[in-house]
Length: 346
Image (cartoon, rainbow, N blue to C red; front, side):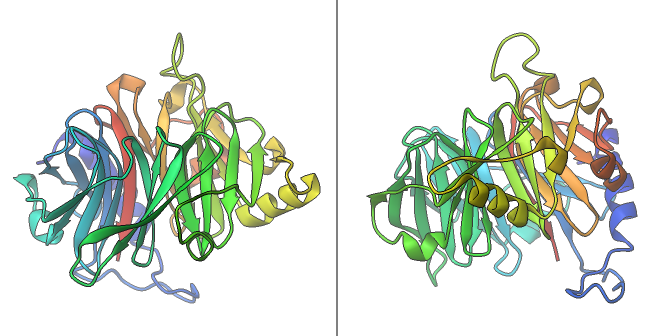
């Protein structure tokens, strides 16, 4: 099913990716093959369906109907061709579906859920994946539940760890897990997360760092050496649907580690606003940007905004990401109560 708004995705993404390189050393451009795919998966808290934007074919989109009524956290594995989303209502579950590519031919389809596991917690906010491990953050219990994907494709709970702060977005960088410290402008680091936390326990972060200029961060996305941090501003009240933004932090791990080291053990460090690029203002349509995705190859930022205009999926092109400031998004799609994103490219 197509509409005029989704065609904007084609103008942005096709133009951005046709000259991109798929090789690791960036020694030359590799032409896109006929079966190449570039997709953006988006969840919402309005009806629980998954919207999949095909960013290579005129940005047509497919609506995958699920049994969920609201979801936060989504992941697609192209090798196994399966989709996982964290459903919040009516039951907190990890829902999985296989043969996803067969459904992505345009139009509205119902994709049967091949497997689901009730979550150990009740308010999932994000999914971070490392190999066969799936970590789900939960804001009611302030915990991370670690699931393993078995050979038959099923998901099973390995263990749950509780932390001493409010949680939201999570992101793996190598073996390390970065987590938003909700209600603050901080990000926490858990070094060697999966190997260091194999049983149920209460744990503390390896270090915490504040990012100057952010009011309240929610979403984070990492690619290359750059981290995107969203800022929802005020959670409610006047102006809450227009006061959001996001920060682009290049050389992220170096800046994070330097701030943590300078502050000392057990003390929150700070990354100065001068070491970040901020995009915010009335033109951005950023009100409550709860999630982000980032493609380093094209330097494109994708945002799920839960409130502005009732909910939007936005994209900011390379020149705007570099310049920062009060810039209009290159893409502005309506998606009621948009909640999470996953960017996939093969």
